[in-house]
Image 1 (cartoon, protein in one colour):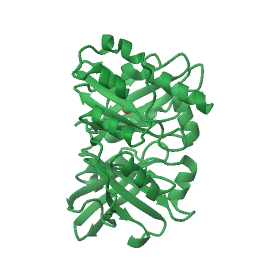
Image 2 (cartoon, rainbow, N blue to C red; image 1 turned 90 degrees about the vertical axis):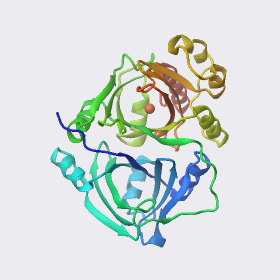
Image 3 (cartoon, rainbow, N blue to C red; image 1 turned 30 degrees about the vertical axis):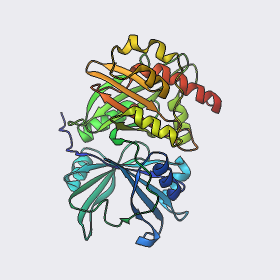
Image 4 (cartoon, rainbow, N blue to C red; image 1 turned 180 degrees about the vertical axis):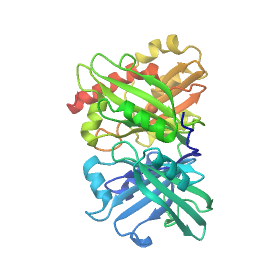
Length: 363
Ligand code: FE2
């Protein structure tokens, strides 16, 4: 069995978007991210501008093209706004590159060191599903806030945070019959283990279905569920994603909080749209999940979902897509012991997603 590649956590997630300045404002105002760094024409870049925002351990980079021939423009034209880079924090970016490439990964960026007055960062990169890439970031000899090449971004507007703490998992949608290939990629190239798998018997409604395998590294700080569509009477939400994204790509980022009621209520106040949860969900949920610490009426008021596994329970809720195409969205999650991903909520959620698909004419 392949040894798990040493990874310290998610370093950053980079979105390629149509307008990075406005996207950064959205993540500040709606999600409570704090401004951190900037790179663009003023720092010597010619083809792109990037705004970096952070909330506790979550770092997002919003990047837009400045010229039509930028690879960022190409990506955005094809996929709309979406995740390009899932960056992983490692101790040795050269070794991570060499090991993964030796095990079959396609190179994206050869290891390269960059320096500024705060020290040195080494970065390298490989391709994963679709046009998505993993960058390896080695920052043990660096004391700066983000990366060399970026300057501090300190706008006057600095709204309060929303209690988001870290990336819990990042889900990828892949094409028909591609789930096993991608899961094997994470197993062979990264040495990840399969944590859980779901098939269409677990995840289906009358109309739509999907399959999923969750791949995780040895310290469990990196969890990548991989979904593929399954046959149903009507079009699966994964197919809808693939149609609009133009192929495989990241479907959602799950962000953890330790006070989901406070976080969801702050996000709703700031204008974040969540999937609808019917009141009837709360009529039967206690039979399924048993005793919980929270007041069920409060969870019902904020439409927070509950699920339980052998090691505890979790609270979660999903946003609607955060861009024009029905593609990428966020999950907000609070774990109270549970290691799983909310399988018990799939039924209620899918029915809600199908209602949204129906209204878009894509079911
Ligand atoms: Fe999730």
